Amino acid sequence: MFCKMADAYKTFNEVLVNLYNDIMLIEEKAIITDEFKDISNNDMHIIDAVGIDEPKNMTTLAKKLSVTVGTLTIAINNLVKKGYVIRSRSNKDRRVVFISLAEKGIAAYNHHAKFHDEMIKAIIKDFSDEEIELVIKALSNLVKFFRSRL
Image (cartoon, rainbow, N blue to C red; front, top):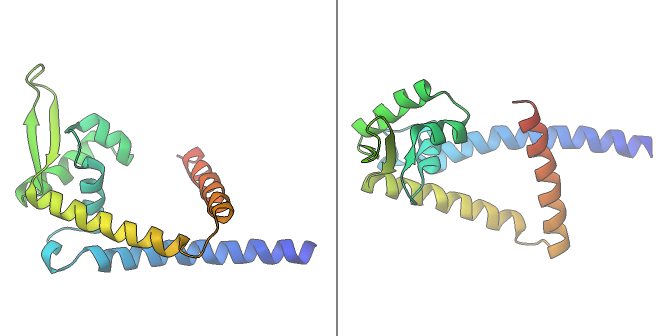
């Protein structure tokens, strides 16, 4: 039993390390195309966090991305210049800045979402409902582990 457990730990570690590296590399190649070559993978994740729903204020976005408002401001400034996001002030409180996606940002958002949709479909295509629940449980435990380290 011990050998199986040790092998499982080693295999999990290898899979997770390789998965992280592959996702970062492959996602960048898949989503940063000729159409979106003027932004980084990090920019694309900011665009994803802004989303296509209602505009978000800077504090909400910074918390969602686990960055400071100052760091986010620099990134948003670049995305505004490139035409991906729109900055607007609240009518109720002019100090509050809202961020939403411009047309170009919506196109980037949809492109990124399509990549993620294809990735998820590839993962679960041959899984039973029970296997999907098990993978969700395992990945949820991983998320809890990482968030406890923040």
